[in-house]
Image 1 (cartoon, rainbow, N blue to C red):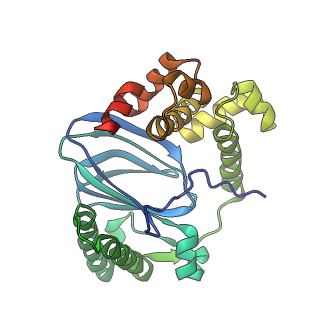
Image 2 (tube, rainbow, N blue to C red; image 1 turned 135 degrees about the horizontal axis):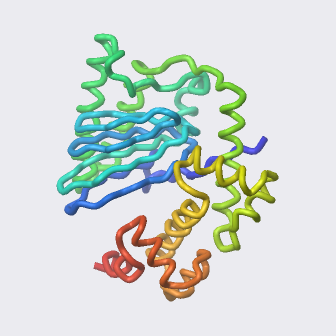
Length: 286
């Protein structure tokens, strides 16, 4: 059975982890469609809130000071209104990295998303992790020569805290849930590797050996968006990467990413990034 990782976790610079500090000076809506990683993702809200952070079948409203963890290969999505002065941090530990440090991780999962169920020791550990996350953000904003060393140390301290205080034995998923995940991964894998091609419902359904009607219902139910919306989202991601990394013309980037032209590419970019192609390039050149 193939392993579909969907989102490849690429560490930042010389670090062993991926991270991003999210901050914005204006208000805008954001939606990150359902996806998964082969990695452990930690989300922390320092200022602001997330309206709906969906992890598998659970929905969380994440407010300031809240920590959420997405275990490896778990489907998750985000809907929120980003407000002025919001500040959040996301860290993803590649699974191979965690496994190398803690070989037993395959038998466990991190359970930190329900603070009401914490023991007294876990409450203290939770406060300690929040302090470490605040320190991580401050270090990420610094220009010190040992910045990467400090980020590596703090990220390891956070991981150590999680593994020492918040792991539970992993339960085997029901066969039906495993089958759903496997099918979703197969569909998404086909879409993401064929963005330049015609991706009609009929073609995708034939490739995945299911009916067109079943594909439409199944995808909408589990991904909270239609197949067409997801294709547009993935093409927008790919086009934005090309806009920032190549000097190709806008028309070439649009066609290379499966859009009919600049206009349709700009509609997708505006939908997901609130900027068109020219605005993305102009801002990057400043």
